[in-house]
Amino acid sequence: MTYKKNIAIFASGNGSNAQAIIDACKQGIINATVAVVITDNANAFVIKRAEKENIYFQIFKPKTFVDKVAFEAEILKTLTKHNIEFIALAGYMRLVGTVLLQAFPKKMVNIHPSLLPKYKGLNAVQQALDNKDNELGVTIHYVDEGMDTGEIISQEKITIENIDEPLESIMAKVHNIEHELYVETLAKLFNN
Ligand code: GRF
Image (cartoon, rainbow, N blue to C red; front, side, top):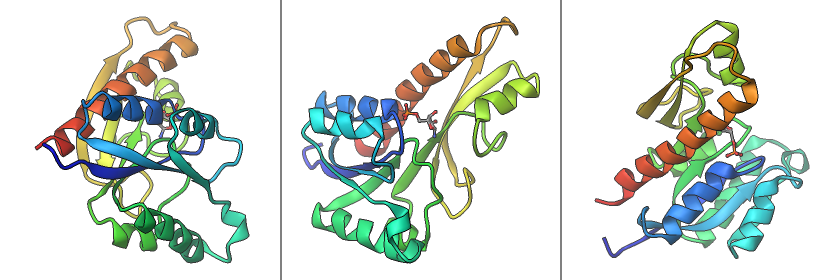
């Protein structure tokens, strides 16, 4: 339990899951250190979080690279420089390509707000509600070349009792479960 791996978090937006992971690492709940935050969005709130936590962050703008290979090769340089051994995607709104997948085989996980394989892609909660599902959920899975398709590691169901519950309140429940499940899952992956 003494050796702590350096992990990188990739996020494109708010970063509430990133924050949950950072907090759990600081508290020793996850035996790892969040050493780097990577974002593809210069306006992402996750940048403010990284600044506040004194965590190294870097913004990579995809449009400034000729292609995904060049984009990811540059990210990989940063990850290598900081001895990153594992990547947690947390609201990273982009498919991961071959450069990073090959560098981190089974060392990259993602969180998705549905009971995969149901409702992959964007607006997964809304997709489930549109389909009149009252059983929502959250999944943590390994990342492969597909969108939300990799091997499932853990899942948690959220049952909505009242179909008229406002979306905001449903989303708040989903986010709470996300934070708990992500921390719990990473703790299991790192603490043995
Ligand atoms: C989460 O709902 C996550 O499941 C999805 O993107 C959202 C990111 O939220 N992949 P946040 O930026 O962590 O608050």
